[in-house]
Image (cartoon, rainbow, N blue to C red):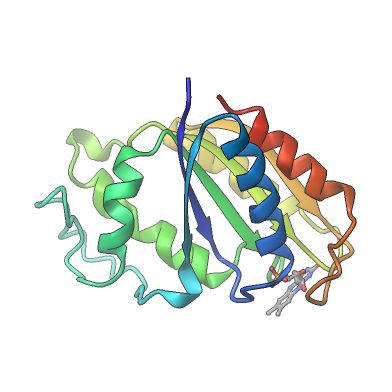
Length: 182
Ligand SMILES: Cc1cc2nc3c(=O)[nH]c(=O)nc-3n(C[C@H](O)[C@H](O)[C@H](O)COP(=O)(O)O)c2cc1C
C-alpha cells in the first residue's frame, strides 16, 4: 500500500550531499506510488524546545510556540513514515533536525501517557568521514523508545563539498530504499 512519507531535511545546504540523497530517495519512493513531502528545515522558522511541558492542548497546533512547526505537525500526524535526513555534524545529526524533532514532543503531549504516534522511519546521512557509530546508537535507541520501525538507512561517507556525492553508489541505495517502500 502506498505510504505518506515526510522527510525532515536537516541540511542547511540546498544543493548539498544530503539533498542529493533525498532526491534519489524521493524518486524511488514516488516511482512506486508513495507520496513524499520534504521539509527543508533550514528555510523554516523553527525554534528550539523550551522544555515547558505545556503543550498538547490543541492537536492541530500542539506546541505553545507558534512558528513553522505548525506546517509540519499536520503532515507528521498523517504520515506513515518519517525520514530523518542530515549531514553528520560533530558525530550526530544537525541542530536544525534536532530542534524540529524535539518539538514533536508536543504531539506526544496530546496523548495519554505521552505516547508517541507509531511511525516507520529511515535515516539518510552524508559525512566527510565515516564515524556514524554515535548517530546509529542514538537512532536505534530512538526507534526502540518511540516504538518506531526502522525501514533502513543510507549513510554516505567521504563527501565534504557540495557535489562530492555525484556518481556514488549510495544514491542508488537511497533510490532503492525509497522504491522498497510500498
Ligand atoms: C559544523 C560541521 C560539523 C561537521 N562534523 C562532521 C563530523 O563530525 N564527521 C564527519 O565525517 N563530517 C563532518 N562534517 C562534514 C559534513 O558532514 C559533510 O560536509 C557533509 O557532506 C555535509 O552534508 P551537506 O552537503 O548535506 O551539507 C561537518 C561539517 C560541518 C559544517
